[in-house]
Figure 1 (tube, rainbow, N blue to C red):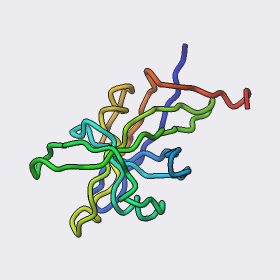
Figure 2 (cartoon, one colour):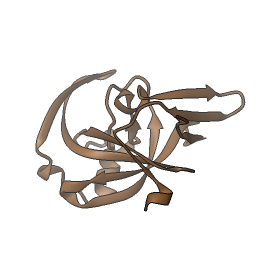
Figure 3 (cartoon, helix red, strand yellow):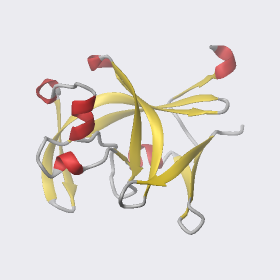
Figure 4 (cartoon, rainbow, N blue to C red):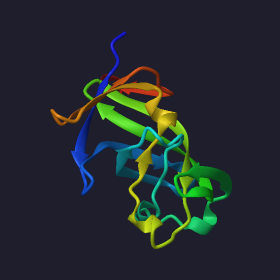
Length: 150
């Protein structure tokens, strides 16, 4: 069976790879479009504190807790069940994740939201910086909804 192709883009001041998706956070009744920076070094998808504020999510209401390890050492973060949804020509693909959410600091407010390996490992990524081309072929997913079934 043919799987969808998701197009990425280059952007931001770092000229990094990004992908657009919808995010669904049921407990907070949040459904919004998001830009995720591609981060093959991140084991999990992360919602930036700036996006938490933009989506009007009260950080104090996040109940999950996870310890993460990054370039700056260990950090305690909140986590929240969510779905990351990619719209493609034939329908949309859903990935269920536990979003990591770092606490708000001056430094963390500068971070983009990240698409981590919890989603990326389920796709085949083609990255060509010279041609400025970034695509993802869906390999596995949690749910798929074809447009003609809506």
